[in-house]
Image (cartoon, rainbow, N blue to C red; front, side):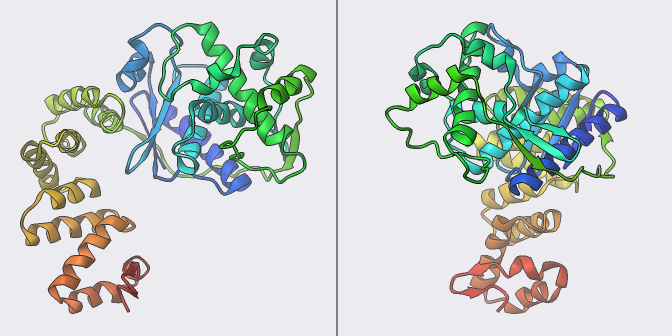
Length: 382
């Protein structure tokens, strides 16, 4: 886990502690973690968050305090540091649950995605117990009225709701559905992070309305060992790297053009910033502009600070087997658990009959577990 901040070292430390606690909580309860390494940003104000998620400022409606999404190589969370502690923690937990949902149900419908974040985001730790399912007054007050459930079920992921009233009802009904599926309808079954949601019965809406009308939302108290905070030091970064890191969060998201704008600002301050150069190359790679992508990624690679992803992309773009091997070797040295790079590198060794090179990797204890990946019907190191 990495936590960066353009506010202060103390801001990064606070967010690191809060995310570390969330990670330990869900690891303890469900052995659930995001499917990719987590990178977090404690941004200093609303303007910094707006740069990361401009789409929320391009229409009327609620402005988020935090945002998250899972990219192909890392999971990202950004949160405003200048808001009240309780609000920040709630926003972080909500967004962290989105990443857990993305790992377990990447095609989850919008109501489930938001309902899980609302449900698990309201979890409470009291001493040596975790309280799950405590009713949220913001939602229960909205549920005294009702909109046809099909409206909530039809909402698309990423669909913005400009007016606060329909948005609040969507979140309230989504929370209620998840609460019912996890604690109401499930009876005494073991607690699960993700309920069965694919086949809702025809009577589901009437069952849910009855559950809500009774107002007897079930709670569970689970034993919990208080978490010992991690000792990793967070990072406060200067403006060029802050811009570049935020650009890296954006380039795989819904607004990659905004990532390019931030990367260009970073390069104006530091023309050799490897992250910003890589963002530019990645953008053109995703836009299927290989010549431009190769130019930017080569500049990133030449700084000796490029990530494993730059090596992967350059290997895919290179017609030379020798260059592909060089880029893939750099990728596995930068990120030893990157299986896609290992698979491609091992294919090169095997195709060329260079078993001696392969054996040298296998004989190094630091690599043995990684290069013992399945390779056809045999281990690469067998």
